[in-house]
Image (cartoon, rainbow, N blue to C red):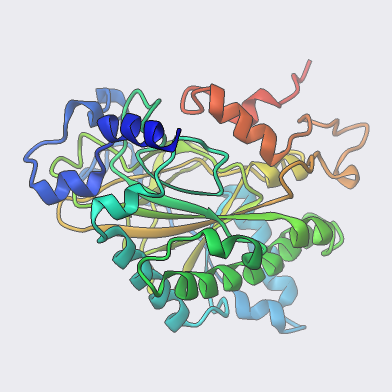
Length: 357
Protein backbone atom coordinates (compact mmCIF):
# COMPACT_ATOMS: atom_id res chain seq x y z
CA UNK A 1 0.00 0.00 0.00
CA UNK A 2 2.81 2.39 0.98
CA UNK A 3 4.64 1.69 -2.30
CA UNK A 4 1.46 2.33 -4.30
CA UNK A 5 0.97 5.65 -2.49
CA UNK A 6 4.54 6.67 -3.25
CA UNK A 7 4.40 5.76 -6.95
CA UNK A 8 1.13 7.65 -7.39
CA UNK A 9 2.57 10.71 -5.69
CA UNK A 10 5.90 10.51 -7.52
CA UNK A 11 4.14 10.85 -10.88
CA UNK A 12 2.36 14.08 -9.96
CA UNK A 13 4.67 15.64 -7.38
CA UNK A 14 7.18 18.33 -8.34
CA UNK A 15 8.19 20.69 -5.57
CA UNK A 16 8.61 24.44 -6.03
CA UNK A 17 12.23 24.06 -4.83
CA UNK A 18 12.88 21.54 -7.63
CA UNK A 19 11.52 23.97 -10.21
CA UNK A 20 13.59 26.87 -8.88
CA UNK A 21 16.76 24.76 -8.70
CA UNK A 22 16.23 23.58 -12.29
CA UNK A 23 16.28 27.21 -13.45
CA UNK A 24 12.87 27.30 -15.17
CA UNK A 25 12.53 30.67 -16.98
CA UNK A 26 8.73 30.77 -16.52
CA UNK A 27 6.27 29.33 -14.06
CA UNK A 28 4.58 26.19 -15.43
CA UNK A 29 0.97 26.68 -16.55
CA UNK A 30 -0.48 25.03 -13.45
CA UNK A 31 0.87 27.93 -11.32
CA UNK A 32 -0.53 30.74 -13.50
CA UNK A 33 -3.43 32.50 -11.79
CA UNK A 34 -6.43 34.00 -13.62
CA UNK A 35 -5.63 37.71 -14.28
CA UNK A 36 -8.09 38.96 -11.62
CA UNK A 37 -6.30 36.95 -8.89
CA UNK A 38 -2.73 37.96 -9.71
CA UNK A 39 -0.89 40.22 -7.24
CA UNK A 40 -0.25 43.78 -8.42
CA UNK A 41 3.45 43.75 -7.55
CA UNK A 42 5.48 46.92 -7.90
CA UNK A 43 2.40 49.13 -8.16
CA UNK A 44 0.05 50.67 -5.64
CA UNK A 45 -2.93 49.30 -7.59
CA UNK A 46 -4.99 47.13 -5.25
CA UNK A 47 -2.57 47.49 -2.34
CA UNK A 48 -2.75 49.90 0.57
CA UNK A 49 -0.12 51.73 2.60
CA UNK A 50 -2.05 51.43 5.89
CA UNK A 51 0.11 51.50 9.03
CA UNK A 52 -0.30 48.17 10.79
CA UNK A 53 -0.25 47.82 14.59
CA UNK A 54 2.92 46.82 16.46
CA UNK A 55 2.39 45.99 20.15
CA UNK A 56 5.04 45.84 22.86
CA UNK A 57 4.14 42.71 24.84
CA UNK A 58 6.40 43.61 27.74
CA UNK A 59 3.59 46.01 28.78
CA UNK A 60 1.41 43.00 29.69
CA UNK A 61 3.79 42.25 32.57
CA UNK A 62 3.72 45.78 34.00
CA UNK A 63 0.68 46.25 36.28
CA UNK A 64 0.18 49.94 35.47
CA UNK A 65 0.58 49.47 31.72
CA UNK A 66 -1.24 46.15 31.14
CA UNK A 67 -4.55 47.90 30.48
CA UNK A 68 -2.86 49.99 27.75
CA UNK A 69 -1.60 46.85 26.01
CA UNK A 70 -5.04 45.20 26.33
CA UNK A 71 -6.62 48.30 24.73
CA UNK A 72 -4.10 48.25 21.86
CA UNK A 73 -4.80 44.53 21.30
CA UNK A 74 -8.56 45.20 21.28
CA UNK A 75 -8.23 47.96 18.68
CA UNK A 76 -5.96 45.81 16.47
CA UNK A 77 -8.33 42.82 16.69
CA UNK A 78 -11.36 44.94 15.77
CA UNK A 79 -9.76 46.77 12.88
CA UNK A 80 -7.45 44.16 11.36
CA UNK A 81 -7.65 40.80 13.15
CA UNK A 82 -3.88 41.15 13.06
CA UNK A 83 -0.90 42.74 14.82
CA UNK A 84 2.85 42.35 15.16
CA UNK A 85 4.46 41.86 18.57
CA UNK A 86 7.85 42.92 19.89
CA UNK A 87 9.44 42.06 23.26
CA UNK A 88 7.51 38.79 23.10
CA UNK A 89 9.97 36.83 25.22
CA UNK A 90 11.23 34.31 22.64
CA UNK A 91 15.04 34.67 22.42
CA UNK A 92 16.46 35.53 18.99
CA UNK A 93 18.73 32.47 19.27
CA UNK A 94 15.67 30.17 19.42
CA UNK A 95 14.11 31.95 16.41
CA UNK A 96 17.32 31.83 14.35
CA UNK A 97 17.94 28.17 15.20
CA UNK A 98 14.43 27.27 13.98
CA UNK A 99 14.98 29.11 10.68
CA UNK A 100 18.35 27.38 10.31
CA UNK A 101 16.77 23.92 10.83
CA UNK A 102 14.04 24.72 8.27
CA UNK A 103 16.63 25.88 5.72
CA UNK A 104 18.51 22.60 6.15
CA UNK A 105 15.32 20.55 5.83
CA UNK A 106 14.23 22.14 2.53
CA UNK A 107 17.79 21.79 1.18
CA UNK A 108 17.66 17.99 1.67
CA UNK A 109 17.60 15.75 -1.42
CA UNK A 110 14.10 15.30 -2.86
CA UNK A 111 14.11 11.54 -2.08
CA UNK A 112 14.64 12.25 1.62
CA UNK A 113 11.73 14.70 1.85
CA UNK A 114 9.48 12.39 -0.20
CA UNK A 115 9.54 9.87 2.68
CA UNK A 116 7.17 12.25 4.49
CA UNK A 117 4.92 13.20 1.57
CA UNK A 118 1.16 12.82 1.95
CA UNK A 119 -2.02 14.28 0.49
CA UNK A 120 -4.02 13.30 3.60
CA UNK A 121 -4.79 16.41 5.69
CA UNK A 122 -5.32 14.24 8.80
CA UNK A 123 -1.68 13.00 8.82
CA UNK A 124 0.14 14.31 11.92
CA UNK A 125 3.36 14.88 9.93
CA UNK A 126 3.34 15.58 6.20
CA UNK A 127 5.54 17.13 3.56
CA UNK A 128 3.91 18.65 0.49
CA UNK A 129 3.82 21.35 -2.12
CA UNK A 130 1.18 23.97 -3.03
CA UNK A 131 -1.89 23.43 -0.76
CA UNK A 132 -2.70 19.86 -1.72
CA UNK A 133 -0.87 18.96 -4.91
CA UNK A 134 -3.23 16.06 -5.70
CA UNK A 135 -6.41 18.18 -5.76
CA UNK A 136 -5.37 21.82 -6.41
CA UNK A 137 -6.81 23.34 -9.60
CA UNK A 138 -4.20 26.10 -9.50
CA UNK A 139 -0.89 25.37 -7.79
CA UNK A 140 0.92 27.68 -5.38
CA UNK A 141 4.66 28.38 -5.26
CA UNK A 142 5.22 26.84 -1.85
CA UNK A 143 6.70 23.72 -0.27
CA UNK A 144 5.89 22.84 3.33
CA UNK A 145 6.24 20.44 6.18
CA UNK A 146 3.42 20.37 8.74
CA UNK A 147 3.48 18.60 12.07
CA UNK A 148 1.47 18.46 15.25
CA UNK A 149 3.52 20.03 18.02
CA UNK A 150 1.57 19.95 21.31
CA UNK A 151 2.10 18.17 23.56
CA UNK A 152 5.61 17.97 22.13
CA UNK A 153 6.44 14.62 23.75
CA UNK A 154 3.51 12.98 21.94
CA UNK A 155 4.52 14.06 18.44
CA UNK A 156 8.24 14.85 18.24
CA UNK A 157 9.35 11.27 17.51
CA UNK A 158 7.35 11.43 14.25
CA UNK A 159 9.11 14.62 13.12
CA UNK A 160 11.91 14.55 10.52
CA UNK A 161 15.11 12.85 11.70
CA UNK A 162 17.03 14.83 9.09
CA UNK A 163 18.59 17.29 9.48
CA UNK A 164 19.76 15.90 12.87
CA UNK A 165 19.21 19.30 14.58
CA UNK A 166 15.58 19.61 13.43
CA UNK A 167 13.76 18.06 16.39
CA UNK A 168 15.78 19.97 18.98
CA UNK A 169 15.77 23.40 17.30
CA UNK A 170 12.18 23.39 16.03
CA UNK A 171 11.00 21.73 19.25
CA UNK A 172 12.35 24.61 21.36
CA UNK A 173 10.63 27.14 19.10
CA UNK A 174 7.33 25.18 19.23
CA UNK A 175 7.37 25.13 23.05
CA UNK A 176 8.14 28.86 23.18
CA UNK A 177 5.26 29.73 20.83
CA UNK A 178 2.86 27.57 22.86
CA UNK A 179 3.66 29.64 25.96
CA UNK A 180 3.34 32.89 24.00
CA UNK A 181 -0.02 31.77 22.61
CA UNK A 182 -1.28 31.22 26.16
CA UNK A 183 -0.39 34.82 27.10
CA UNK A 184 -1.96 36.21 23.94
CA UNK A 185 -5.25 34.31 24.28
CA UNK A 186 -5.52 35.52 27.90
CA UNK A 187 -5.04 39.12 26.75
CA UNK A 188 -7.54 38.71 23.89
CA UNK A 189 -10.13 37.15 26.25
CA UNK A 190 -9.61 40.04 28.67
CA UNK A 191 -9.98 42.58 25.85
CA UNK A 192 -13.44 41.11 25.11
CA UNK A 193 -14.50 41.55 28.75
CA UNK A 194 -14.20 37.80 29.45
CA UNK A 195 -12.23 36.18 32.26
CA UNK A 196 -8.62 35.95 31.12
CA UNK A 197 -8.66 32.20 31.78
CA UNK A 198 -11.87 31.75 29.73
CA UNK A 199 -10.19 29.22 27.41
CA UNK A 200 -7.38 28.10 29.73
CA UNK A 201 -8.32 24.42 29.93
CA UNK A 202 -8.99 24.15 26.20
CA UNK A 203 -5.64 25.80 25.40
CA UNK A 204 -3.72 23.41 27.64
CA UNK A 205 -5.36 20.41 25.98
CA UNK A 206 -5.50 22.04 22.55
CA UNK A 207 -3.62 21.33 19.35
CA UNK A 208 -0.71 23.15 17.81
CA UNK A 209 0.07 22.59 14.15
CA UNK A 210 3.41 23.94 12.98
CA UNK A 211 3.39 24.71 9.24
CA UNK A 212 6.96 25.34 8.10
CA UNK A 213 6.80 26.98 4.68
CA UNK A 214 9.38 27.54 1.97
CA UNK A 215 8.64 30.00 -0.83
CA UNK A 216 11.55 29.66 -3.27
CA UNK A 217 12.60 32.42 -5.67
CA UNK A 218 10.02 32.49 -8.47
CA UNK A 219 10.78 33.44 -12.10
CA UNK A 220 7.40 35.21 -12.59
CA UNK A 221 6.17 36.44 -9.20
CA UNK A 222 3.51 38.63 -10.83
CA UNK A 223 1.78 35.52 -12.27
CA UNK A 224 1.61 33.34 -9.15
CA UNK A 225 1.13 33.30 -5.37
CA UNK A 226 2.74 31.40 -2.54
CA UNK A 227 -0.63 31.01 -0.81
CA UNK A 228 -4.13 32.05 -1.96
CA UNK A 229 -6.39 34.38 0.06
CA UNK A 230 -7.68 32.50 3.12
CA UNK A 231 -8.26 32.76 6.86
CA UNK A 232 -6.90 30.26 9.39
CA UNK A 233 -9.16 27.78 11.21
CA UNK A 234 -7.18 28.30 14.43
CA UNK A 235 -7.78 30.47 17.46
CA UNK A 236 -4.51 32.29 16.78
CA UNK A 237 -1.65 31.88 14.34
CA UNK A 238 1.78 33.08 15.44
CA UNK A 239 3.90 33.70 12.35
CA UNK A 240 7.65 34.02 12.03
CA UNK A 241 8.87 35.24 8.62
CA UNK A 242 12.42 35.53 7.25
CA UNK A 243 11.48 38.39 4.90
CA UNK A 244 8.36 40.21 3.68
CA UNK A 245 5.76 38.53 1.46
CA UNK A 246 2.63 38.35 3.60
CA UNK A 247 -0.34 40.55 2.68
CA UNK A 248 -3.56 41.01 4.66
CA UNK A 249 -6.93 42.28 3.48
CA UNK A 250 -8.20 45.39 5.25
CA UNK A 251 -11.84 46.33 5.88
CA UNK A 252 -12.00 48.08 2.48
CA UNK A 253 -10.89 44.88 0.73
CA UNK A 254 -7.49 46.35 -0.12
CA UNK A 255 -4.36 44.22 0.18
CA UNK A 256 -1.90 45.59 2.74
CA UNK A 257 1.75 44.52 2.62
CA UNK A 258 2.99 43.41 6.04
CA UNK A 259 6.44 44.90 6.66
CA UNK A 260 9.29 42.74 7.87
CA UNK A 261 10.36 43.88 11.35
CA UNK A 262 13.55 42.32 12.70
CA UNK A 263 12.77 40.29 15.83
CA UNK A 264 8.98 40.75 15.63
CA UNK A 265 6.38 38.00 15.37
CA UNK A 266 3.02 38.29 13.61
CA UNK A 267 -0.26 37.41 15.35
CA UNK A 268 -3.26 36.56 13.17
CA UNK A 269 -6.75 35.91 14.53
CA UNK A 270 -8.31 32.70 13.27
CA UNK A 271 -11.87 31.55 12.76
CA UNK A 272 -12.16 30.15 16.32
CA UNK A 273 -11.66 33.62 17.86
CA UNK A 274 -14.11 35.18 15.39
CA UNK A 275 -16.73 32.65 16.52
CA UNK A 276 -15.88 32.95 20.24
CA UNK A 277 -16.18 36.77 20.02
CA UNK A 278 -19.50 36.42 18.16
CA UNK A 279 -18.06 38.48 15.32
CA UNK A 280 -16.73 41.39 17.42
CA UNK A 281 -13.28 40.35 16.20
CA UNK A 282 -12.75 38.99 12.68
CA UNK A 283 -10.32 36.39 11.44
CA UNK A 284 -7.90 37.99 9.00
CA UNK A 285 -7.88 37.11 5.30
CA UNK A 286 -4.31 36.90 4.07
CA UNK A 287 -2.23 35.68 1.13
CA UNK A 288 1.46 35.22 0.34
CA UNK A 289 3.32 36.81 -2.58
CA UNK A 290 6.60 35.45 -3.93
CA UNK A 291 9.83 37.10 -5.00
CA UNK A 292 12.13 36.81 -8.01
CA UNK A 293 15.38 36.95 -6.06
CA UNK A 294 14.66 35.92 -2.48
CA UNK A 295 13.67 32.58 -0.95
CA UNK A 296 11.32 33.23 1.99
CA UNK A 297 10.78 30.93 4.96
CA UNK A 298 7.98 31.14 7.48
CA UNK A 299 6.82 29.26 10.56
CA UNK A 300 3.05 29.42 11.00
CA UNK A 301 2.20 28.08 14.45
CA UNK A 302 -1.56 27.40 14.36
CA UNK A 303 -3.08 27.03 17.82
CA UNK A 304 -6.56 25.66 18.26
CA UNK A 305 -8.88 23.92 20.68
CA UNK A 306 -8.67 20.11 21.02
CA UNK A 307 -9.50 18.24 17.81
CA UNK A 308 -13.12 17.40 18.68
CA UNK A 309 -13.87 20.30 21.04
CA UNK A 310 -16.65 22.53 19.69
CA UNK A 311 -16.33 26.29 19.97
CA UNK A 312 -19.31 28.63 19.93
CA UNK A 313 -19.93 32.30 20.80
CA UNK A 314 -19.05 33.07 24.45
CA UNK A 315 -22.33 33.21 26.46
CA UNK A 316 -21.29 36.56 27.96
CA UNK A 317 -21.17 38.07 24.44
CA UNK A 318 -24.66 36.86 23.53
CA UNK A 319 -27.82 38.66 24.68
CA UNK A 320 -31.27 39.60 23.30
CA UNK A 321 -29.68 42.38 21.25
CA UNK A 322 -26.77 40.21 20.08
CA UNK A 323 -27.99 36.77 19.02
CA UNK A 324 -25.38 34.07 18.28
CA UNK A 325 -24.09 34.84 14.78
CA UNK A 326 -22.38 31.48 14.29
CA UNK A 327 -23.00 27.79 14.83
CA UNK A 328 -20.43 25.73 16.71
CA UNK A 329 -17.51 23.91 15.08
CA UNK A 330 -14.37 21.93 15.92
CA UNK A 331 -10.91 21.63 14.35
CA UNK A 332 -11.98 18.17 13.13
CA UNK A 333 -15.03 19.68 11.37
CA UNK A 334 -12.65 22.02 9.54
CA UNK A 335 -10.37 19.14 8.45
CA UNK A 336 -13.38 17.21 7.16
CA UNK A 337 -14.55 20.31 5.27
CA UNK A 338 -11.25 20.92 3.47
CA UNK A 339 -10.95 17.20 2.65
CA UNK A 340 -14.04 17.39 0.47
CA UNK A 341 -14.46 21.08 -0.43
CA UNK A 342 -12.46 23.77 -2.20
CA UNK A 343 -11.91 26.20 0.68
CA UNK A 344 -10.56 28.78 -1.79
CA UNK A 345 -14.04 29.05 -3.32
CA UNK A 346 -15.89 29.27 0.02
CA UNK A 347 -14.35 29.99 3.42
CA UNK A 348 -15.20 27.43 6.07
CA UNK A 349 -16.41 30.10 8.51
CA UNK A 350 -19.02 31.27 5.99
CA UNK A 351 -20.63 27.82 6.17
CA UNK A 352 -21.35 28.17 9.90
CA UNK A 353 -22.64 31.76 9.91
CA UNK A 354 -26.29 32.05 10.88
CA UNK A 355 -28.57 34.13 8.66
CA UNK A 356 -29.52 37.46 10.18
CA UNK A 357 -33.19 37.10 9.20
